[in-house]
Image 1 (cartoon, one colour):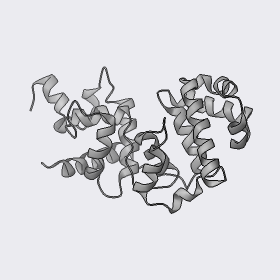
Image 2: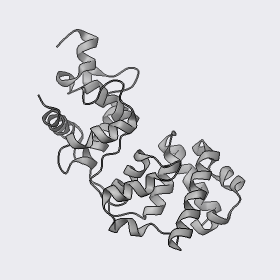
Image 3: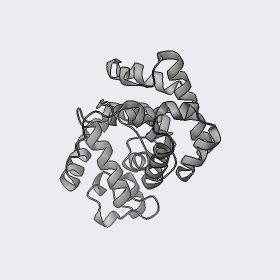
Image 4: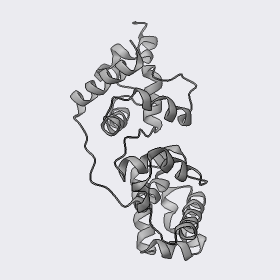
Length: 223
């Protein structure tokens, strides 16, 4: 079975199990970018608390731009990697102000997807996953962000090799994602990874995908 066909079968199976997630309307792109930077290597709860504290201390991005880095670090400390993330945010805001004269990323909506990804990824601290999340969630683009859950599941299902990096997976996986399904497939894989296909103790007895899973075949000797 070719990978594209296998991905379609798995996408359908996850939708039968979990439903079809739908995204909301367009979001503020800069808000989404900074929220996504804060989400790196932390939990959703810590990300949201860090973002809320940042907005509480600095009600505008202009205020963040002109703030002392130490104050930004204090505000987002709960999100982890606060020194690194504060530098990423502050440097990006400085670039945006200098290049565009305005702290807005609304112009991203008018850019081609590949050009928008390249523009965001040229900044230190903003990788392909962060850029892809922003374009998917804030702009409604048909891009496929790969997080740790999706990377793990994709290896177990044989979509990508075991030694495939997250960055490489962002190149390999999108071509096999069923057309028009990038967002629901992304969301369902994440939920599936959290609830069933866990990293340490996957609940294979509850999994509807075992017939397609290399990990299951290896663990059980079936296949």
